Length: 131
Image (cartoon, rainbow, N blue to C red):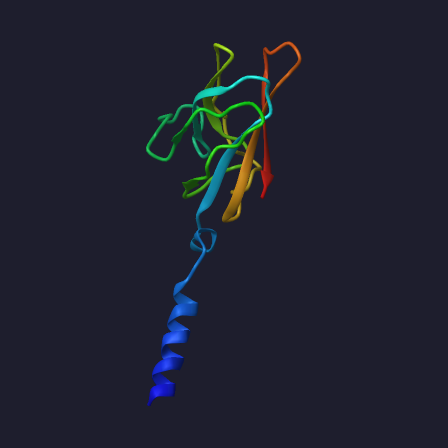
């Protein structure tokens, strides 16, 4: 009887421990590849133009120093590019995707949106990488 109970406990422990990405969650962090701190960053990875932006599925991130990464934030769904709004070196950058035609949702797991600026500092680039 003891061995059956022990086996049951082991099975329950093994099947009950799921990583967040196994539960269908996409986790996204921001990596700052600029020379300035990123302030007031908001990411909404499944919003499209004409929809309610900055909805409940978006997250605000803490300030991110140059060369650093934020903490991961969970999303129910996400694409490789996203609606974003942030300030870098006193300038606001924002974009809202027009649509996601031809795009596929990211698989559950951890991803990094790498933020960089062009040499003139007038265009922000967001690249997605799986972690």
